Image 1 (cartoon, rainbow over the protein chains, first blue to last red):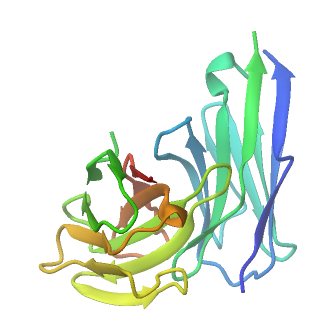
Image 2 (cartoon, each protein chain N blue to C red; image 1 turned 180 degrees about the vertical axis):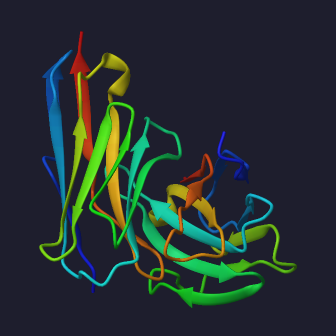
Length: 109
Length: 115
């Protein structure tokens, strides 16, 4: 059974810092890995999708990497802003998405 | 706006009542998924349709839960005899045909509160 773990569970940083969110998974037989953002009480917004054959994807200030063999992914956020405050979820795709518990990020002005 | 819509956005019901939620996926997507999310946790898979066929169901989907996608377009999720433990956010997602690049797009969710 696939298990996904995200570390840290919560993170508070001052505005402008670069930060890294970690995601690990137990079964490397995945089609892809997706990172999502979730604001309180809202649905999920897809940020980045990395196919299993890829190593990384970039979108603006976000960069996600994937090391399938070691079962790890990282989401790098450059020059964090208060508007980045949200919960960040990673999910791996088998027949369905299996999610981690999320990292709650607070960026302080 | 991802294009996936869900109705209602909020539902408050009393224990023992039946509730039904609706999901309208992005029009060209043939795959539709239901997930449940409780406070402070990541979403958990419930069930998955490809066109009108329900291909997989989680063990979380007890016999009080039923989902349909009659014409391969919108889907409904019904919960019978609701219990307080059913209180959660119910999320719907859709995706296109290519599983390898299969990006799932989520709706805003339906928040269920069972009193």
